[in-house]
Image (tube, rainbow, N blue to C red; front, side, top):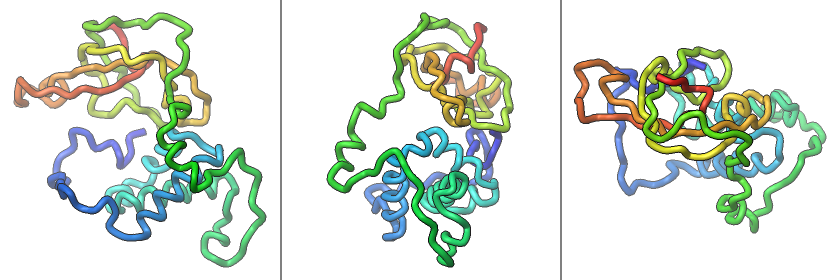
Length: 219
């Protein structure tokens, strides 16, 4: 969707400030939010793409003004409410409901293993050959879905070059909308800055994106 998170190529939002070796968290509540999001992922009520869509579909005014972990908190709250895991009253501390059954839980001594395990890989066995070879010229689709997509707005209807075939992976445009994994071929595609942002850009600059086969057609 064309929401507040789709900022590629936009101007007027100020510089990105790198705080170097600054702290990973700027308050204890941020640590708790990250821990809560990771732990809730083990419940099996949603996948990483649905979780991402919950954050990116926040109202643009909220997405652009909330801090990073406030966005995480608002996104996971949406998911908990949508799936009946909490009620608005319970969220506000007024009442409690019985816990609903979930597929699993994440124990403290299993966190490191869970975060570094290959079992969470998005790669899937291929059922077909890739449509595009390395070096192929491709053009991206001109789509504007109201649902989740990993094709950014600034790179739609643009021509680029396949620089690598990355494998057969879960298709976020399906998985993020609750429609199943529907795995597709994933490609690394390079675009010149002039192709994306106009003839006044530096001719030596480029942007490389990871895009799925349905996002592409032969140029």
